[in-house]
Length: 399
Image (cartoon, rainbow, N blue to C red; front, side, top):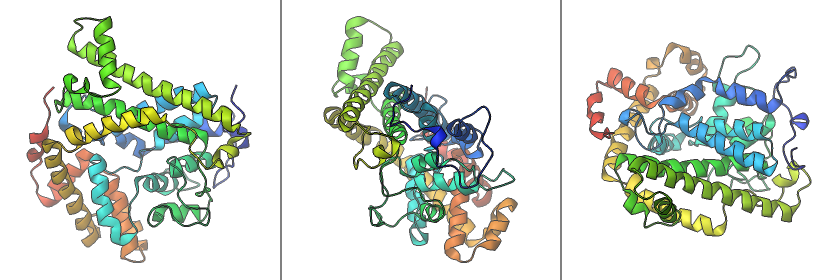
């Protein structure tokens, strides 16, 4: 039985465009299914986190990451008496707005779009599910429920102050445009389920970045023995299974790291929820603090790990060299289409014809380039600009 502060699908604030209620699925289950069937969700298969798409079959993509986040979100939601369907829907959608080439692509797009209203991947995800997915006869987008859209827009916390002033920089254009017609309460925290999706994202990427970094050879198990959380995890495995082979030892240790994070979140959340005694889902939104979070101690230890990963993985010479190459790809494609929109695919021409000014045209170009997969961006760069895709093979990681 769900807790009183869980999102209640029977009390949903509804959809922008009214639809017949499904006989067999709740609004949040329907949202989840629409996200899974979206074109942008399928494209996550060939979008990556740190390594570019063709570097190896074992590295996480945005799709595998989203599935892992959804799994953690379901576990946390069930343990806390929350609505698992809503948490899963938000988790599956949270990365839809990411560009090709991971955070490197996002940095490049943010720089390119700075004169035209900026770029934010959460706002872009909202734009995708409310506009760019154009498959339904009655509306653009997926027409998701208010609760799912709210979670996509602000799962990391309030976006504006109570007086409407943006908390950080200008309000992303996509978010401002949609919120003007469907108020998502940008001044409050999101539901507990959205907060669960946000912390599940942290759990998943902390875990898989360690795994991917080991597989890439950027650091070793001995390096992790020197860190908090990971060091004790490897020591426990060594005590229980002396002489265990390398891959099993790695898996056993990292699944313990995973478990430490999940159990910490559950314990902290239960304590904070018992103290706050929220009467309903809206009470969570108005608490003024994030209720689903790591303990202070674990947060500090995870910060040590993140600093290690930043130095040894995200800023490793091989990764930095790759970042420079793919940044060039994003810049070249964006400027090519902005200066010559006729090179955009035919299905984008109607949008171009309706563009009122250069800002609107830049937003269309951004939508197209940001939606590309790693592979397609490289192919288009080669086709349109004559680049040699083979130059990227220097970053392929053995194994």
